[in-house]
Length: 504
Ligand code: AMP
Image (cartoon, rainbow, N blue to C red; front, top):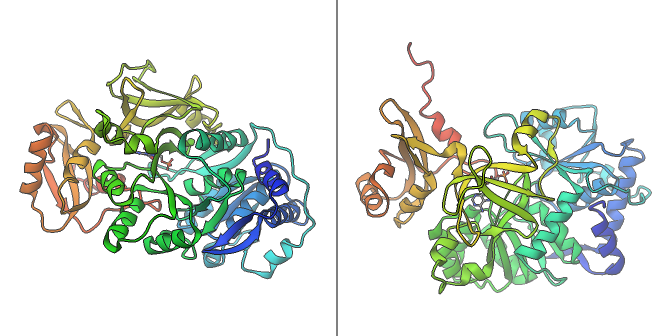
């Protein structure tokens, strides 16, 4: 099925339900949402001259038009290529060329950054966009489940970005998995897009369309804690996807202002490690509103989940371990931990996390070598290291490439980071390995903190972890380098130690 059928169905059976909001102002209902998508589709396939399966890039900051553009693309039987709005024009150009994008939607504020090209370029704030909305609506185009729907470019921190091929079946599976494993959704709910719609937050539109819920794009277009709290109070029953750094900022704001958070129904967090200290504080300050998911572009939002009941069940004898885990396999995913040859490891042993199921990508766009490397015998090799307990709860250690081998022992940076974060003065921390002639690698910590000494942190480590895991060096910094999704760039930290032009 075409994923846009969800919009078609909801618009037919609940046409008057409020659909898209700018802040707390409703812009239009589901009937209009569907009509606009069908007209955008009509323009793309009519005067735009695009053919089924053509790729259409979307280089827009979060805005209400984002949803109608995406659904217009699918309605027309085309492939959406949402591009992170914070990318450099050169990075955008790489994606446009690699995807062979036939058209590009670009928001007003980003239009200047777009390289001149012959392809069709459409800017929502212009009269051309209004004219497009007056195009003859197109009939919903059929798509097979295995057809490509969303070409998602990886962040490329380890090389050139790769296009992850997400099919209509992948998106349908992800949508059902949300209902099965993450949360219930009703028509009274609202999804708030406070993280980039080109990424995980955007993927949550489908389940909210399916249930006829409201879609709220904050006026700031991004994440501002006071705005989130105010919108939640006015709109009510909001859910949102938030990276761990966003959760931290929101919790700080709520704690500092004693704000009322009843309007926040669910915060789904994931995309990077949530430290135990942080989730405990979040639960203390905001109550049982949190659900964790673990996924990656190659299996979007759909590997494991840790539901609110498990997070809230402090009486459970293994609660402390469970909140440090990423939960159990989602209902529609098979997950196992394997050694380098693909053999499943017993509970408690660390290996690479493998996942199989209908949410796993079809492969990398025009890159069979990378596809063969990532998907073997139907299993996606995630590149994440972890271990599973007897009950099936998965604890992630680190990306395999982030693991440190010092004196022949494996050290998982996250374990050291968790300990350093116990110090109240430490705001952010990242642990990496630095090459060392004697030990192979030594542990180095980058710490953003106010008034704490290396000796104090060393004492804290001695209290909690084996001596060999302690950082040999501390670097105090004002903040850590992050990518556009708020993930710490360990590659940049490591580069500080890469000898450039070392004398021979
Ligand atoms: P991306 O493909 O950019 O979404 O990044 C996916 C990667 O983020 C995964 O392979 C993990 O390394 C990390 N990640 C995602 N969710 C979690 C989570 N809940 N806890 C820890 N790391 C996560």
